[in-house]
Length: 359
Image 1: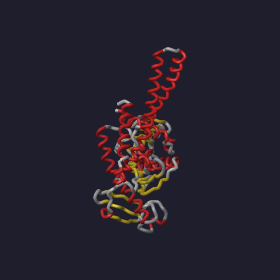
Image 2: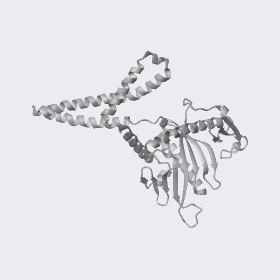
Image 3: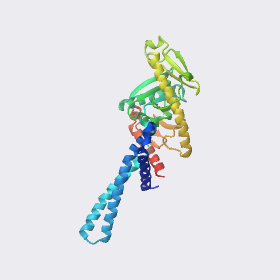
Image 4: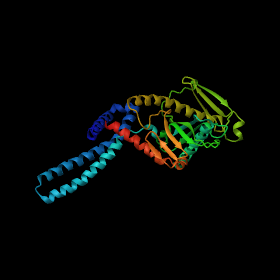
């Protein structure tokens, strides 16, 4: 489908919305009216751009008629010069419109919960999980986000068997979502006496945090609440009281824990957020699976079992396998300088979405 036909469809839908919103009975259905208003606002700018594009095309056609007549050399040359400028404006406007047509993911503006778990590789995998956390912590600082650890299971020789934290700020999930998957590291462990390179892995899951306005079927009658003593870092206080909370959602079997806050009440609030997020993610996973069956996305499949990255320390090499991106600034990246990587992933995903919209 060409751009003009796509915009014509947008204009038709916009006119339908105008008609629906002019019906006085719509005010008796406030939820439907709110949904129509949001869609109307989203389409308005595209419709305005469509009008501008049609005006430019109309001017180009008029100039072409003057050029074809070729009655006055001076007027003909003026028409040619104006057409060159109009053509430039037309191409720029078309590019802007194409990217405005890309559907926005409503989850992109949400905060997120990140779960890092050590995979194959024993102690070295746990240490690498800690390195990934440090990378994300530094990246969050650079974005002026707030990072709050929710649950920790430390490894005996350093690092973490599991670490769960929330990140809040502007466009958090929209940038962090690309981190979901298996991260593989190749390096010589400190305990390796022969200098051999070992391969280890850690898995990362990035879940959009759901707000109270999202409908999640969560009945407190279905949740078993257990308390226990916190075992992670946090000072002497955590070992004196049973402040840690474990929630078990019996219908789904989901279990979440929070132990980082000082009180049971605070830990319970955080654990409920984690539980709502997990339940929301289950629902979204069904949708992602359906989409994947229709079209395999190169960048953001949601498949957390897929190997997405290799961090090769001997070569200082960073490789993102989804877009065949290889960089040789591994030290900088591990210091939290993820901006260029995430930008490349976002561009690739936008191109995929644009192709899907235009086909």
